[in-house]
Length: 101
Length: 194
Image 1: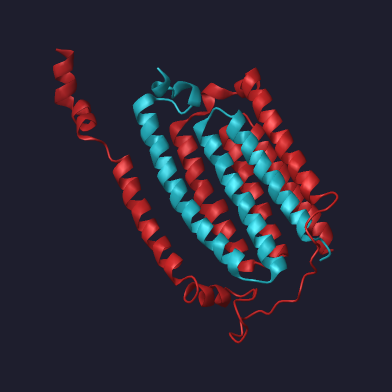
Image 2 (image 1 turned 180 degrees about the horizontal axis):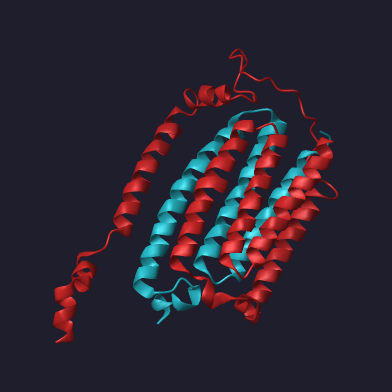
């Protein structure tokens, strides 16, 4: 494969930027959370690319741990969102401004 | 051949991610997200990280997105938002500028001029021999075992403990509090009606 590391990092950076756009733009807490996952995934891609081109296993191990932690994080975060919905009947960030009043 | 595959999969990944962010319907957004994750897994295969590609499909595109879809459908959150996020000027300008600056930065850093030095890919072994210094890149699942039980023993155990903590945390968070249970019992509602 003649594609260099720069192309992979470019794709990873673009994915990160798209996730960032989603976090800033969207109102739905669940979509914001999905965008956060996308940013995490972009970093995974960068780590694997660095690991492969640097010929070490360390980046791959990092991604392994990140996937584990992300799975745990999603479970906890979604439980919090469900608890929030049960109390406030909404998941839009516009409706969740109790601390600003 | 592999170069063409890289361009195909990376464009699929990026376009699916954009569609996820801009889709007014959360369920369709989650579907686009699954496509994006599978595209990333394909990029992992191109980088010869086969184990991680399988883990990506199993854990992210499988477990995590099924959980997301389940919660989206359970809460039925789609009715409110629509395309209203495109009507708020401040959000749109802030998000657009943030996106533009970030992507311009990335493109100028890695696509033009003085980018990272282009390293040639070296051929990798399938199974770690165990004789090299450090842990060189190998493709088999065995190499993960070698790393997990030597250099990364402590993080491995901490991660296991973290999973346990997350499980207990989810149970505690999703349990109903005493007052909520009392408020929902028939006697309480009858008392409130009287």
